[in-house]
Image (cartoon, rainbow, N blue to C red):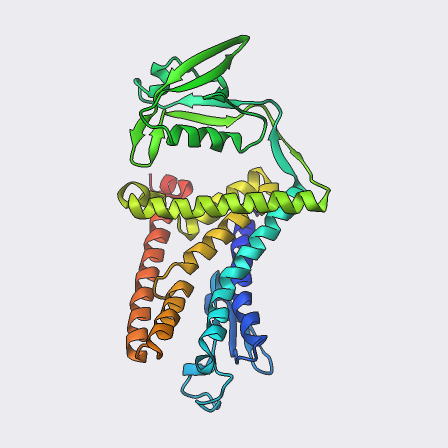
Length: 361
């Protein structure tokens, strides 16, 4: 059931994205002849007055179809309600609506997370050190840090019970490679002060420790709507910034971060683990994937929404669109590359599934 829950989350996010395109088009009177959730063979369909609605066999995808380029369409080529005949702004609204829908939906999910499930907090202040890096000469070990220590402050920045304290501590380490950082530590009944100098890596400083919240994690619901909306906005902003930061690191340090790129199989596996261990975090998981889906789609790459917006920008600058042959060539090339990357990730991640590896042993 946990795997089905993860797939259902992805299907809902894709549905939200495509609904954004669909509603933006129909609200402007633009013809839409197909609305499909999934790819592959049709398992259910309904023909409405103007649009065919379908559910297909593979739910990890979807599309909104327009009759603009269908040779058998009985709509006159110069009809003003065809997407291609609309002004640039109208088309830009339709193209960007999927991204906007995913972002709005992510924010609502985060508000729902703090309102329905609650905000997670540790029962005790500080950051708990689970383990040290396996290397014998890790920076943390050399500084005298031990597993089960609790870091209560770094450079006089106190750590409370918020789950974001772990991220705050990591930022301090990352942003100070090669610089001495004073850590206030609790070890049993002792209070210690140690200095550690993070080792410089391509993505910032590191000291080689595994972290977790200090004590049990408890959830507290925010019943005040204003507080819930504010907390959701803060978390939304944090995830968006982290997502862009992650994509920036992927571009600047591709060799080291490429193995962190996750495809649909890995995403489903992560979602299934969350659904099995902490169902409440599915809200956060869905918001995280929805934001990532929005950011990926807005990138100016062929076959993505960002690529189509780039064509519109060029059209606005030139005063006329690029030749259809050029656009089709670029889009087809981009689609082949994206499908190739997707297929590669699916094969790679499928072969890494634990049950499959055991089968071949």
